[in-house]
Image (tube, rainbow, N blue to C red; front, side):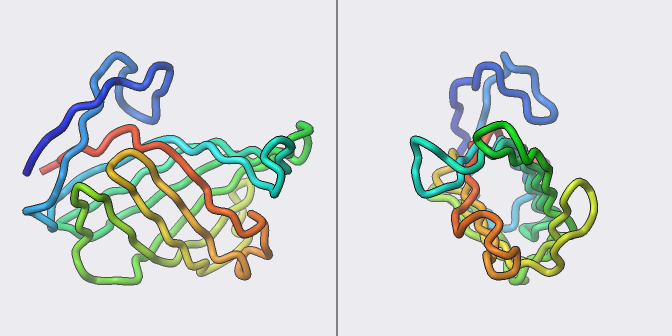
Length: 170
């Protein structure tokens, strides 16, 4: 198991660490059944014209692996139209992974899939939505919801974010 350090992200606090603490990512290239906690922030725009997006998304995410198995994947974000109206929140709840194989988080990252209920303002809106998430090189996350199941709410576009920390918790 190798450990790398990265520079702290100024002004970013996901859930736990102080802003002046160094972020460290842990590679699981030799131990795919490791215990880790990964977290970060979300920031995306939704729409076909990047200069004039339809919606702006900001939020947080957290992934916990226990013995290489995903024990929780939580996502919470606020979505607002670019003109400042239609503010609402979404939460991915009750995430259940599709695979029972260990999550391998190597130096390239990992992709995992599962089903989750999507809440709007803490009320269930869509049930059993297919979710695909990719952590790339321990620095970014891309979350894709099955657009048919959420009535094309995100215009077929993924939610992007930054990995703030990946910590070995064993």
